[in-house]
Image (cartoon, rainbow, N blue to C red):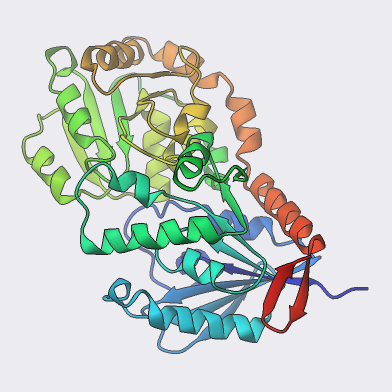
Length: 391
């Protein structure tokens, strides 16, 4: 029997999610696809899976075992890494890859070090896009670190052998930036606890929910101004997530019917989603907000802007509404429908829920990537240690 092929996955893995983990959990809900993806890989006996991640609290390289996989944790700095173009991180990751000798490298995220380390690995590789910093940067002024990240992103999107993303919107933006027409779509699955909850909007204390960093890109200004409108002042908006300096200005001047809840745990996010009348997403650009997928798995209707990958899950008038950011009145009318009639929120939330629950199972994501791994390994061969080329 042939030995399993080795896959190295370079990613900012949330180590606190590992079984019996001693790593501290961050404040709030760590919105990521990676733990459920790793669990989906558990029975993939044809592959030997190695995760490579960085942690500033780890003094020495270490290796943990979970779900029949290896998790290699490398030390790093807390600050100043971007200004060195991640020089030390790149060296550490390349040394680890030389030790593992993977047949394929899968980089998760085009930001920070992960995409750069992937495309410079000199091995067959896949790059999975999470955000698009170049697109986001077009919305306003960027700091030096953000400009460096955009430069790195531009490089890795051009060099990557295979790129995956989770939305047609993101695929179109990548095509515009790079001219590439070979971008693959892969649904990034939702964590299991969201499948175990049922949508039951609060009949006595209705509220809309907004989840995500309160900043300009996410449209916090649009949300606050919307709930300042006379017709909306009897309706509540709950805002969950960190608050940027831009968001702080809107927080200070927000009316009493806008509640700022800060970061919340996954369990708390679920409790809010199942009781809300609707989710609102007035974003100016988003590859695909994870909370939209979570809302659809639960059966929550959504009112959102047209600027992002979330639009693939919203069928106008069926399970939500797509509204222009320039029309506060249209947003007001859409949201009011759910506040005035909770049964409408429930009935609309059910539309396509079963299909969304099917395609957003994390095992579906794992199976899709396992298929890509198998396909790539059939069409590439090793030419000499540490380097791979196309046949």
